[in-house]
Image: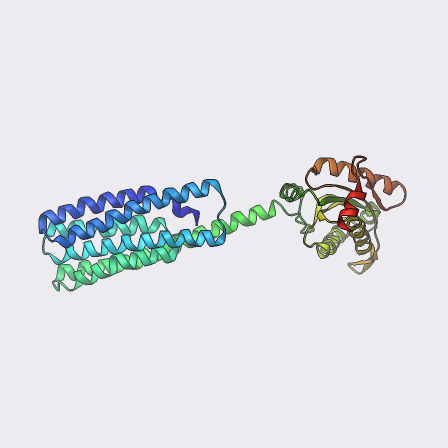
Length: 362
């Protein structure tokens, strides 16, 4: 949608073209309607240039919502359709008169507009296709109605050109759509762990940066790894180990919800970001759910496998939470509980008074 704001130069060119060709036609023919068509085309082209400049400034300051993007598209479409209608009006008037030089310029005007400006908005094919039809179909009919062989041939060429232009519009649109889809897919893959389908470190960092920094809420980071995972790899092979990790990823996705983001950061190490807690007990509850969910037996390639979990977590006020500090504290708790045989432990900064949040939640 934002690409519509970056077609200023074609609009400037078509504005000047309408003015030059239209004034030449008026000087040759003297029909006042030609001046009216020129005035309409030049005015709407200038207006469209100002709209594009405003849209460009808007894009530089904020990300448009869906409703705002739709409004911008409608404004661009309206200007494009009026410009196309002006060119249709001017071209039709020029073809009515049997002045060869005027008709040559009319042909150049239609070809230039359809091949140039309309194709630049192929990212919105309904706008481009409609503009081509509006600008070129009525003048083509006017040419055909002249009745002589030369004009019939010209009308046929116009018709073929219109069809080719439509095909070009849809081709450019499909190419742009494929490129956008590929870029989005690459961006998604860059933020996903390919084995488990969970978020990776990049996605964790972005999610943490996007946290709401409310004064009255807490953020929790759970760090955990698998007890005995090396034994599974040594006994059954790495393929079974990978299947187990994938199964763990599936179970963690079941725990994903509003505010809960499971992440694989490497090997058998995982993180659960609990972004908004209204009460410290919410962290204990989620830690218990993670242990219970991941601790249930797995059946991997027909083999029953049970794995242990060592989980450590820490809590910080959302307004001042720092991912690096929280990861270090949660890791320390995880290593400590691992030495004790697994389970859950926590590392709370001495400066954090959880009772204050408990009282506020109550």
